[in-house]
Image 1 (spheres, rainbow, N blue to C red):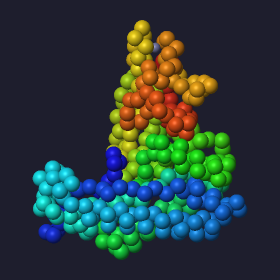
Image 2 (cartoon, helix red, strand yellow; image 1 turned 180 degrees about the vertical axis):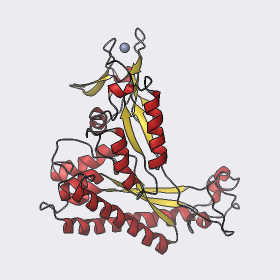
Image 3 (tube, protein in one colour; image 1 turned 45 degrees about the horizontal axis):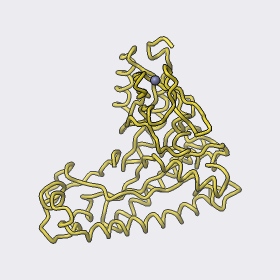
Image 4 (tube, rainbow, N blue to C red; image 1 turned 90 degrees about the horizontal axis):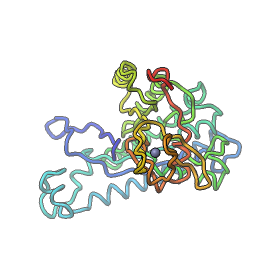
Length: 335
Ligand SMILES: [Zn+2]
């Protein structure tokens, strides 16, 4: 998993081991769903009861996963398990010596801290009541993981799950059963992990500062991100931002929508395709030739340049709604 962060592990000599380790996988909590289930009164007490119930399911999945991986023999992939890719076990030996004791990690993930907090407290998790509540949620998840780690003799960490198509899947479940994703909006996606939602107008530094607090409690891995226009006219601002990230964040990305038109008559290379709503859903449009076919309009979504031909409705809305966290004046470019 690209953002997974392994918990510290010391070998029998007390030396920290940082290489050749691995993660067994993640089970993710749909926090907005847990906030809303059997809870039309938006009661915090009901939320905690629901959370206990769903944590018990996640824990069962985690226990099954760890015990299952432990039984796998090194022979399934000798290059990984026998010849040093991840370990040098004997032929026929199972993976239990790696899975138990903390050499490997396993993760509990969460999504939609914003929508969950909004439903219960009527505030975002960066506001007064919302912030206290959201911190309590992450503290509770970390306590659960600590106890499970001891009971299972493995390392269970909290993970800000990457949500590519999951934003759509989790939102669908909420809309099907409760009519909305937790904040009474008509959106079809929920918000990734602890992020300030994509549609909130906030500057890059404030966004990263707010998210730092929650990132520090999500030590199984997470990514904060900010969205910028073409910043090539203001490299100083980028350096300031990178320094700020270095001083404040566990892991962050700066995303700008590099856009590439593959209409052979055009081949535009630039930034920020126009986003338009069509009968066929959300599309991206070349500013030069007007091309909108998904197969011919590639752009950078987050880490990847893609044309998203298979994009789900929720994921497309999530990308459509994103605001820039530095403005065009700060970019040093004429609009
Ligand atoms: Zn074009």
